[in-house]
Picture 1 (tube, rainbow, N blue to C red):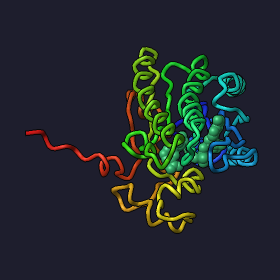
Picture 2: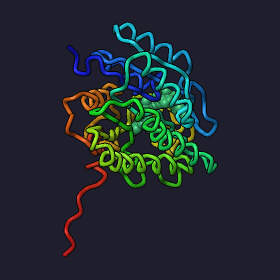
Picture 3: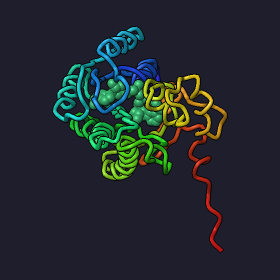
Length: 287
Ligand SMILES: NC(=O)c1ccc[n+]([C@@H]2O[C@H](COP(=O)([O-])OP(=O)(O)OC[C@H]3O[C@@H](n4cnc5c(N)ncnc54)[C@H](O)[C@@H]3O)[C@@H](O)[C@H]2O)c1
C-alpha cells in the first residue's frame, strides 16, 4: 500500500514544475489526480507558462505509474472553470481527499500596475478559488496545501523597487496565502480538514530559470545568463546550494496530503535551505 493509497488529489498548475512533481510523487504513492493548468501565457509575466503539450506529458507520466488523472485546461482566476474541473474529476474518480493549490506566476520587473493585479489574482485569488471549488467535494479529514514562498516571509524578497509592481504583487499575494491558510485551518478544523502552507526557496523550475529572475539575481548585468546566476543563487540560502529541486517540495506535499500528518494544521512549512533563518536573524533584546 502507498502512503496516499486511493486518495484523490486536486492540483492546480499541474502541467510542469512543482505541480507535475507533486502529481508524480503522489501517484507513486497510490493517489489519483485531478489536475488543471492554464496552458497559455499572461501578458505581464515575462516568461512563458506551460503548454498543452506539458499538460499532456504530465498525464502520460501519471498514467505510466498506473494511476488515473483527469486533467483539463482551466484558469485559476476563473472560479467557474475550477468548479467544473473539480466536479468532473470528483465524479469520475470518486470524491476528493486533498487540494494542492500551487499554480503561480512571478511577473518581476515591470512598472505596469497590471502586473500587481495579475500576481495577486493568480497567486492569491487562485488559491482561494481552488479551495472554493474543492470544498463541496472534500471529505472530512481531508487536507489543503497551498504554496507560498520564502519571498512572502522575507522583507525585500521580491518586493523591492527593482522588481516593480509584479514583484510587489508576488510578495503581497504570498503573504496573503500564509495568512489565509492560518485562518482557514481554524475554520475547517471542526471537520478535521487541515490547511497548511509550503514555502519554497529558489526551486529548479521554469519560474526560477527565467530572464526576469536572472535580472533580479544579477542586477549588475544587462542580459545575465543561467551561468551568471548560478554564482548568485546561493546568496539567498544558508546551506551551500543555489536552489532545491521540485521533488524536495513534493516530499513535503506528500507528507501533508497523507494521514501521517493528520493532526498537523495551520503550519507555515519552509523548504528553504535555511533562507529564512539566514535573512531573519533573531534580534537581541533591547536593554
Ligand atoms: N520556482 C521557484 O523558485 C519558486 C519559489 C518559491 C515559490 N514558488 C511557487 O511554487 C509554485 C509553482 O511554481 P513552479 O516553480 O513550479 O513554476 P512553473 O512556472 O514551472 O509552474 C507554474 C505552473 O502554474 C501554471 N499557471 C500559471 N498561471 C495559471 C493560471 N492562471 N491558471 C492555471 N495555471 C496557471 C503554469 O502554466 C505552470 O504550469 C508557484 O506558486 C510559485 O510561486 C516557486
